[in-house]
Every structure is written in structure tokens, then in C-alpha cells.
Image (cartoon, rainbow, N blue to C red; front, side, top):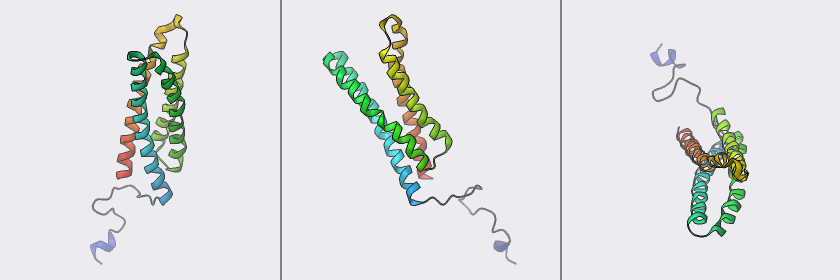
Length: 148
């Protein structure tokens, strides 16, 4: 018997020791869509920061654009969470997607707090930074996952 027939159960060179999943084309496409949505959401956060800057430094009438765009932007992480199940992403990425929604809820609450507790409202931009960092982390991890 040759050595090849005896050791067929061992992984070949370049393969990991774990099971290599056969992903359907729907799952592969869903992963690409998820990755695209993560990058789109990150860009959307940057647009939000720009709109806030316009409202602060140019015209306070731009606050309507800032809050209106936020209502539109919330759709993306909700869709990301749904697509994460279709894409069969690891639970850590699903939880991070849900975490984005949680941070957005905290951002909305911090924007509506009364001025008497303004120190809590000051968390609004801090939470936005956390949202951006979390989104970039998700996008990078998804890129690594789709690349592998």
C-alpha cells in the first residue's frame, strides 16, 4: 500500500485541520453583501460626522440633515443583522452586528436627554466613535472570512 492511501484522512498541504465547509452560492453572496453593507455603514457614519460639522460650523439648519440621515442610516445595521444569519456568519459577527444596533439606540437616547444631564449627552460623539470602530472591525473580519 502506498503512503497516500493510508493517510487520506489527514489534511493536505495548505488545508486547515478543521472541516472545510461547502458554502452555497447564496451564503457566499450574502457574505459579500454583508461586507459591502459594513463598508457602506462606515462611510455613512463619516457622512453623519460631516453633517454634524456642517451644523456646528456653518449653519444650525443642518441639524435636520444630521437627524434625518440618522433615521435612514439605522436601516443598514438592521439589514446587516438579518443578512448575517443568511450568510451563516460566526456568532461573534452576529453579536457585533446586534451590538451596532444597541450603540445606535444609545446614541439616539443620548441626543434626546435634557440639558440638565448634559454630561450624559456628551457621550453622543463618543458612542459615534465606538460605532465607527465597531463597524470597521466587522468589515475587516468579514473581509478576512470571505477571503479565506
